[in-house]
Length: 317
Ligand SMILES: Cc1cc2nc3c(=O)[nH]c(=O)nc-3n(C[C@H](O)[C@H](O)[C@H](O)COP(=O)(O)OP(=O)(O)OC[C@H]3O[C@@H](n4cnc5c(N)ncnc54)[C@H](O)[C@@H]3O)c2cc1C
Image 1 (cartoon, rainbow, N blue to C red):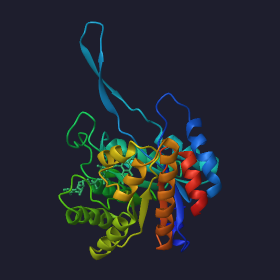
Image 2: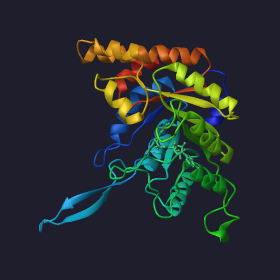
Image 3: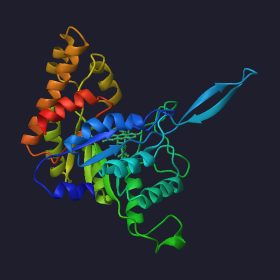
Image 4: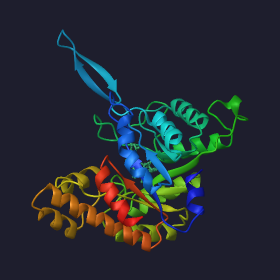
């Protein structure tokens, strides 16, 4: 079933989890260890992130270096298929522009469609670690909106080669990312919303937000989106703080604020257990308010934190 069909079927807030593929060399058992304890809460769908390959320099015997590409977390398509097969729950595959030509994207989408994975979250991806700014792959997309257009075309039976215009029509339900605290490259929220609207006008069916720790940021964002003519469902993405260092690393990595009250609580904790408890308590409060005010679905960034997730979700759902 499509994400938007799940949302349309009920007035209640749904539940979804986002997981990362395991590091290369680990087994899919790592995914099951995260998901098995969470399935009793009946998530409507599960998102699986996509990770671009990075290049590293490997030293050769003669002291010269080889440029080698490695993908640390491969397996998104296979994990989505495994989730649908094992748990009978819809999987949402993330697809990114970075590191892909349009042809490679098309092939990945064909694989997904053949596997009945009809939900995709379309993203640009970040700059690779060796770059300052995002650079598209030669023959790849520069913005997520271009990726949306490609998928919408495939849904109409239009593939990249002109002679297959009357091709098989895929049936993808399309999500895109939104940023309550604006995307860090945008000069301001107004500009970011202009491009978010472009993604929706191109055919995105719903939005999932970047994480936030102050619900007001989400509620204001939804209001601004509506005022700008963006009317698709906006799913809030949240995660609990699980270690004291995240008070500093999360703003740096995700370009979001930690409210004073939350950082004060965490800084006053005496040990890591207290931090986890405080992070879980904050996330429970956030979740309850989001549900009370009618959020269509809560999207939890699990990041492998199974215990914290279980505590939160068992209190809230
Ligand atoms: C819910 C969620 C899930 C994510 N999952 C993944 C994942 O699985 N893998 C991964 O690598 N990353 C993931 N990310 C991170 C994401 O790839 C980055 O935040 C990335 O920097 C931006 O992606 P985007 O799709 O929002 O980009 P875009 O929508 O393309 O926007 C990128 C920037 O360009 C601007 N912009 C857009 N269009 C134009 C235009 N036409 N002209 C000028 N400026 C423009 C936007 O305002 C924004 O500042 C996720 C983020 C979220 C919120």
